[in-house]
Length: 221
Ligand SMILES: Nc1ncnc2c1ncn2[C@@H]1O[C@H](COP(=O)(O)OP(=O)(O)OP(=O)(O)O)[C@@H](O)[C@H]1O
Image (cartoon, rainbow, N blue to C red; front, top):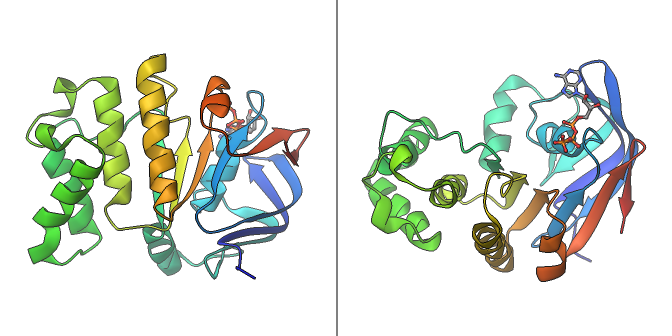
């Protein structure tokens, strides 16, 4: 049987002093698309930030593609994050440089082979449909285009997992459908996608496994 790519075993996740999610057991398999839903403050971002090792795991275990998150050492955080591509609601592109240079910055930081950088940047921008904008500054792009650049940036190091926290939160409905379609295509290409959202019409348009955060638990819909 296929091994889960992400597994929570009796995991308790804290945000500050709050135990937000308690004794979570959950397995997510390679290539799955998973929606994370639930009311404000029920723990969607906490779960995503815990997977990204931004928040320490309080109790239990989380295993991501063989990496155990319990007491993860600093030196192991960078290799873990190479396995993860992260997309947030607010685009977080560097405003002082072009799209191309935003992506180059990531490849430099992750020591991607120098000779292959240009080709890789063009490849991911083509995939997300914004190659024509590569020399523009972020403020010259619409919200939807910026978010496509952010997804391209998340794909740069060819991670197996994409974590998206309300990626359509600032977009109009049509643009958000196109973006959700793109994330579903990315998942069909074999990547695991976890997407937190409040936009329930997406669940009807693009049905997928759905997990709801409620009362400190994660409930399978
Ligand atoms: N920095 C912090 N320190 C302490 N508690 C926090 C902090 N940030 C968030 N919380 C609390 O943690 C709980 C979970 O928040 P979280 O952001 O994970 O919820 P969410 O489901 O993602 O909400 P939203 O739908 O608003 O994004 C909330 O009760 C929130 O008040």
